[in-house]
Image (tube, rainbow, N blue to C red; front, side, top):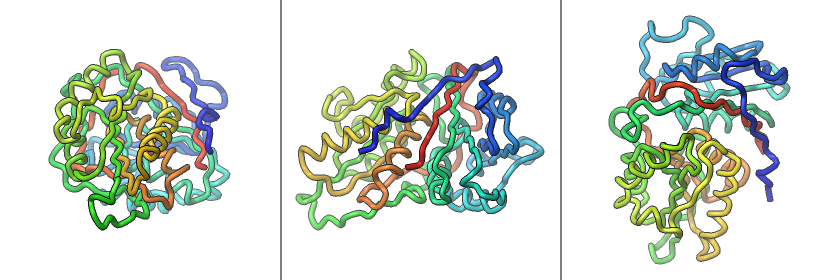
Length: 322
């Protein structure tokens, strides 16, 4: 059994020099308009830096950096990331010291880039995440724009699912990482209408006021989820900024839910913070490959180019792709 407490996270200063070991061969960031994305990119020391221009943000040519960019029009996260690595032509990638800032990444791209690095034989990668000072519209903040186009499995995270002959014989489980986008929570819950549903909330939250804002939004999806979020059999908690505790809590959920009745199929849907989504990813790559477990996500027409103001903290997570 994997001990997630062996993984290490540290805080980097916002306005001071970073430690000497915070220096990489390759640094990858997804561009958006947030100060916390651009400030970190400019601060990082790396031999090579790359901006990924995700098509979901719908930037026009004059809005993006003029150099070190990778642009690809396909919104499929698997095709986008594979084409990036083909274009970058990184030699002996297994021996490169790689850092990824996930702050600007849309979650499926973040998930697949780690899945692909594992496929390429990379075993260690440093992950950065900058916490916002606050969200621009507080509890009214939405991160996706436009309607949900489809809810599907994330590329590289499709499980070997069992076919249920009758609802009486099934014990499917949907684990929702519940954040601010109540409409996304509701739509994912409704798609898996026959599955038992539990929610994982960020507590402690990134900022003191964000937990209350999160709960206000989650209440709006309560009918679709099918239960009171305060029910201790349906609600779990992990720090919003700690992917390793999140991974450990996910294992606890599996063990607790399966002890009541053997699980048939499990669906993970990380709709909260990027560090929690990273925790879902770490857990899946370590324990769920070739199991009846899938990562599912609601794919929207576009995403907001800027949702936050300021930087409160910068985290570095030392991730091992077990």
